[in-house]
Image (cartoon, rainbow, N blue to C red; front, top):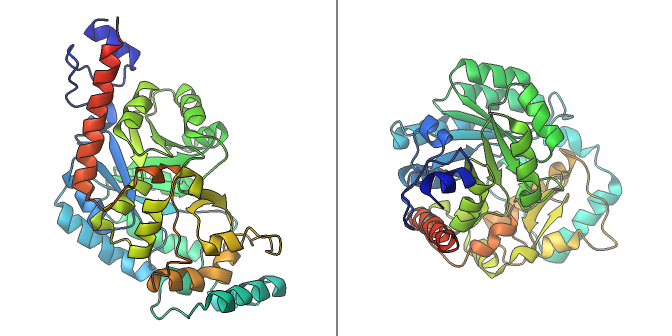
Length: 385
């Protein structure tokens, strides 16, 4: 097969490469648009990870959905100072059907007594001590008032992109675009993708069932081609279960312009992952993750722990909706992370957890991903007649 035919087979969105088996850099149109070297998008709450991904040629996306509102401007300022003009994005979670304004104390009275008793029993069973430090999970409730503060900070930033993981806000999309920011939406179905495009979203992130965090019922390999087919000229990124460069290249071959990774970075030194959590991730395979409502009230893929397993027993009540589930259990989540409790600690994690083999760095991970893309390209080349 000639060079042009090979480029065509991988889709017109992939830049041509040399006709030999060595792949140089794959740069899709969105890479050119954003000024990045590799079609790798990395989501993280850790500022050190965000900076390292940018320095390695990827596009970092800073998650600010669980940060204290008063800290967000300082976090953004630190990231932008360290990035020194390198492009990055910010991700928010903006679910609907939350209170206009609320506090944890005001919502505690709405908690069903049976749920309160069940959680108290778990606290005693696992000897959970109250957290010492204030955190998002012990001081905040997802509400429209909170979202307004988060949105204001994001729009005032120099972030090149704005992504929403849950929820679409037409006014946010319009204002972000007016300020020259590229808008992204994580979607788990064709229906959600169509709604996002109708609202003016410019980049769709097809997030499959494999993904960590809040996710839907369709696997990445089934979801991606459907989103690509209906997206028209809108760029599509693939997300969910991606841990290798071969997977990244495969997604490009299916029409994606890049891959969105999150779980993998928890192995990096820059993530400052608590030791017990890192050990759990290293020991886990894809089957050690599951989708549960016990974390937030919405379906969320996490890595299993004794705490998560306790919510899957016959005596466990059905988790409450968002934001009440966080009001019910947020202090326990904060405590297990604060104390690095080896029995209980868990985190949102995708089926890509298989890619976490040991402690590493973002630079090493990016190098490995690119090398694996090259190896996969060479392997394909040997099969071409």
